[in-house]
Image 1: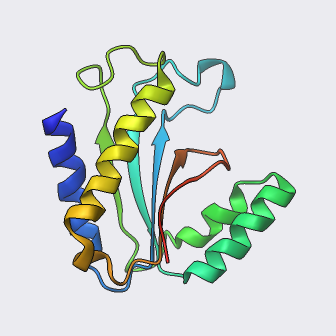
Image 2: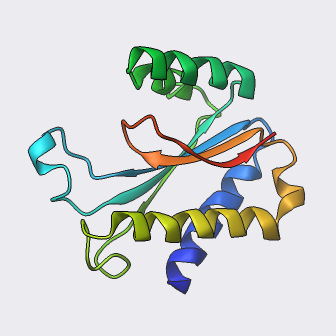
Length: 147
């Protein structure tokens, strides 16, 4: 698990070095469009950034939940912006040998690592307004940091 923690830490610290980033969203994604194959692929941890402020994100999140449409959030990512950053870390069988079983336990590992990164580097997160974790396309975001 130390190698996974190191990889995630490296990527997160690279992202927070960009002072224009306001929001970080980490999601577990298996890269498949077929619901029946949702958990057949090796999961990845995607780390994406949003330059918009936290209030704009909160409004988009509320709308997404009200409308049950994740696109209200994904529209904020600004994939075309020069400042947009996305990192990807494979969570292959070395890290999660029982995937897709024990998803909650595996999520807890990732959430714990993310919180520990913030705890050990608080000064680097001064400009970060929001930090969330979720499974791609799902609206039940876990708050890692909110200012």
